[in-house]
Every structure is written in C-alpha cells, then in structure tokens.
Image (cartoon, rainbow, N blue to C red):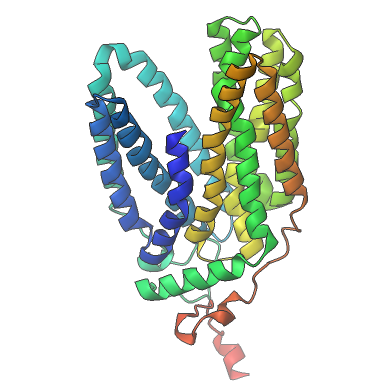
Length: 387
C-alpha cells in the first residue's frame, strides 16, 4: 500500500519530468533507484528499512517505469496504438505472474538477500542495456510516428524549455475540461474496487471453506485471464471507443462480486475470477487510448501522470480500509460490498464521459507562444504547388 501511495503522489511530477526532459534520462534515474532499493531491501534489519527501501524507493522506481514507457508508446504510434499498448500491458502482466512464481519457489533456497539482489542486479543491467538504444520520440531518430502521413515533415526534437512550456500550457487547457478530472475519478474508483479483490480474494475463498491451494488457484486464474484482457482492451477501445469499453468493463468488475458474496463452491469462485478479470483488465490499459481520443497528439507524460494519482491512491487505500473493516466487523461481506460500491461508482463515471470522437482541446496550441507551437507540417506536392 505504501508503494501505491508513493506512486500516487509522485506520478504528476514523473510525468512532467518526462515531458520536459524526455523519458530516457528519467528512466536511467529510475533504474538507479530500482537497483539501489532492491540491494538495500535485501539487507534490511528494521521495519522502517522495509518501508523506506521497498515502499518509498521502489515505489518511485515503479512509478517511473509505469508511466513513461506507456507515454512514450503514444508518441511512436499514430495508428495501431491499441496493439502497441496491449503488448506493453500484457507483457507487464506476464512478468508479474512469472516472477511471483519464481520468487515463491526460490525464496527458501536463496534467502532474503539474494532474492532481492539477483533480480535487482540482473534486471538493472538488462534495463540499462535496453535504454541505451531508446529514443524519446521518433523525431530524435529521424523518423515519423508509425501511421503518420508519408508527406508529413519530421519535426525537430524540442528543447527542454520549449517542452516545459508545451506541457504546462496543455495541462492548463486540459484541466479546464470535466473529462480530465473524470478520468482521474474512473482510475481512482476502479482501482479501489478491484484491488480489494486482488489483495483479499484468497482470504475470501478460504473463509468460505476452500482450501488454501484452491484459493490461490483462483487468484492465479484471475491474473492469467487479466493478461489476456489487458492485451485485448486497448484494441477494442481504439475501434469501439474508450467509453463503451470502460462501461462494459466496470459492469463486469461490479456485478460478479455478488457471486462470491453468496457462493461456497470452487467453480463459482472461478466463474467470478473469469468475469472480474475481464472487467478489471479493461481499466488501466484503456487510458492511453482515451487520452489520444479526447486530446489528440499532445504531451502525454503530464496527462497520464495526473491520471495515475487515482491509480496510486485507489490501489493503496482500498485494501487497507477493507482489511481494517473486516477485522472490526468480523464479516467478509463488508469488503465485498465496498468493492461492489466502488466499482459501481467507476461505472457511473464512465457513463458520464463524452463521445470519444470529440477532441476536447483542439485549439490548445493557440495559447502557446509562437516559438513553442509545433503543428504537423505537410509538404505540398510539387504539382499542387504549381497550381
């Protein structure tokens, strides 16, 4: 929960830094923080060490790698953005599942120090190797975004000060729209709803009479279906619009909770896990598509960073609150009803979204000083120029 709280608080700052300086240097800083946090966690001696190294330091590193690669993908793809985002989020889900299994199986063999040191060092080296050929934008590589018109001129890389002005002015324009705040609300309430389930579903199942092994299987099945859902949701959002995907997804995240509220059998828990995973899987990966549909080709880091406030605070607050209320009341139904209520609110917020075909800030660059405007330049074919 502390990691999520840290993520929520630093996300706007991380997004702003990415827009100003580009993702590459901030990813390098994130790698150093990640490796340092993993090494220090491996030798922690006190509880406050755990909170500082694992909660705060790794929370900052996780935020950098959650926001900037996703924001960067939107710069590289004018079309097929849904495919690109789907691949990114699916691989993230696969990585989480694989490493949970590896760490669980190797913990007794390696011990506390190596279980953090080995992934920290190996992953750190791999990330540095992968960042080396990373470009902040297609313009830095002398390329056009995938799907851009072939006669569009390649833009010159922006200077840091120009990027800072553009990010600040766009954010001011976006914050004047109701949708900007509504998207943060969808992220907040949606994450409140599903992280109660992610953290407590095994305890729910055991409390209803399932064995710990079967209960853990329910969670593993839910996460596996979630990988498929995260890969599919951006494609559907790009074709059908983000609004319909979110409404359908929040519906599936809300009402299947009623199954486990009354069920005792393993098959009912697996049915719930299947439906809930599809609903949960539609939320987070759809945000880059929504940003493109509502705001166009704009500075994405600051926009996505602000939206991640809802993600961090929702993911951090919900399981703590639900766990406390379960302990106080002695009734598992309370956190389940909380999950139902939070997800229902997210569904209502999704229904309030405008049509994804409407650009909400079409003229935002008019508020920029002339030297900071970067409208796409289309070369006029010679025959048209002669006419």
